Length: 341
Image 1: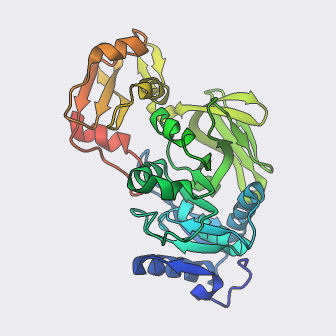
Image 2: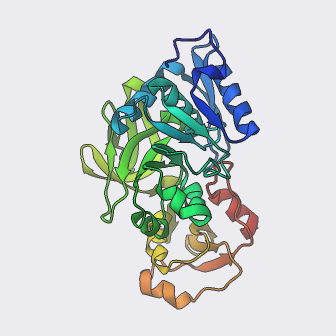
């Protein structure tokens, strides 16, 4: 059901099952915004790399994004989709729009309990954050495995989580995108080999001089959008994500990519979260610091086995609790401020 039916602002637009009354309220608020007389809708970025900001998107562009995703995954009216992402952000809104466009039946659960729906329901498609997926594994791995296809987005997938995904029987994809592109513009299937992101039809990308990605998506109303993401192109329509330019650490002239270093350490299978970050240093300009969400001391000799001499952190900061965004991503900047002040 497309956005053309603006006169009906009720939940009857969806074939929907609510698991919680709060879910109903959030969806109802969004649908009233979606079917009002305005041609645009307000969106909020997640704030993972700085202050949150609001922007306005044309509804017709969001519909095109939904159609692009639906074509890739072959959505149809016989599918049942799980909506467990917050309606506050683009990821949650896009799940509703996809269900409207392809007349999919949908099950809505709370973000902190995505698998709270009845056991006898068969879910064809779900979108989650990596954090939600990992939590769902611990809560009910068998039930999670019964979801046929899962799209993960909003944060990188650690090697530790990738190992768990490869042990599951369903299809898992990872998305690349942002609020400014109205969800993803590239996708990749999680496999044993390190697959690059595949740019979706209708989207064109190129690399700036500083190696960051520039996105052109006329069907989404996006022109020359310069991201802060450093990438490496495999072909004209495939790229590897290396990390955010914001987080690149220049230590004594050596440029270090925290996300790449985190992949190396993920083979240690730590049961706690961690990340690298750059802090000011009188000698090196910036120094590489490892933040660990645990009071348990690590064996620093293990770092020397996996990292080069330049990649060894100058210090390790143990934290009680990281700062997280509302969408479940680690807020590196705020965590670093909190524990390094």
